[in-house]
Length: 356
Image (cartoon, rainbow, N blue to C red):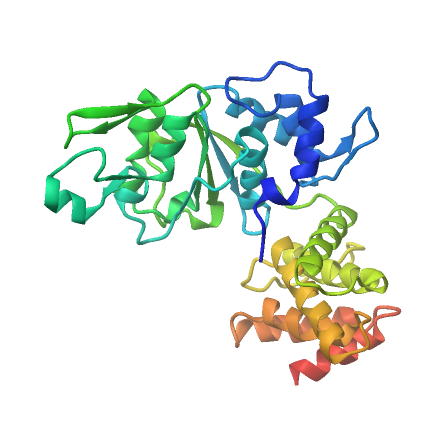
């Protein structure tokens, strides 16, 4: 349903590799300059257009890429919906050509997911051996000189997190059962992501945090940037779901982004009215989800044109997470801001209908 980044953008990666004549770190598919161009977009000398994968400050991507070119691991930190996972995947695809060496962090992630496990049938039959050992994505990345990824690092229990300390500091993974170790091949590095609203869940130890260079991914700086991000991602997701394009839907996308930004910031766009903010994050990722769902509604139950009624229910679901407090915030916003805004009457009616 969703090809990996290295498959979806194989043409762009191939064109960049062919045009890239700059120095490349060991086992990198592209030079740091080409990796940054892949993430930020541009036009090559032969006319090939590289689409931007990340819309934001260039220096952030440059620092992230430069970190991976050293022996220091990269931690992408930010609020939900700031494209941490997206950037992580595309960085791994551009650097190593493989974004699948992934450990998904949860409260139940075991130590074996980061170190190694065992094939218990072989273990019981023949005892500990390399053949009975099941390598983790991190171990495979170390052995092959590639980039591993750890998603939602702060969701992983603290004692499991600290398994990474030896890997990142000594570039070695001991296997005491065999009296052996796996040493990282040059080119190995690790990208982790963390939600800075998860502080207090499983905070990183100071020893582990020192092993990372932290890059904070901000929310989109301007409404136009956020509209651009939502439009691009909805278009990509729509094509994968075989939904027809919705060129007339830009107005609704801009409305969704405006609502999310105003409630998120606690202030209307013109700066005249202070607002209460709901409990949800109202991230760019949620805006993409609302618009994609609206496009599906317009396609299957409408005339194919994205309208206010198609996105109203999705916005309500994103805003009203706490049925009591958030509903009051939403109703107040509808009556004091949306109702009085020129050209938003249809949006107001659609939201009132689903909120009733």
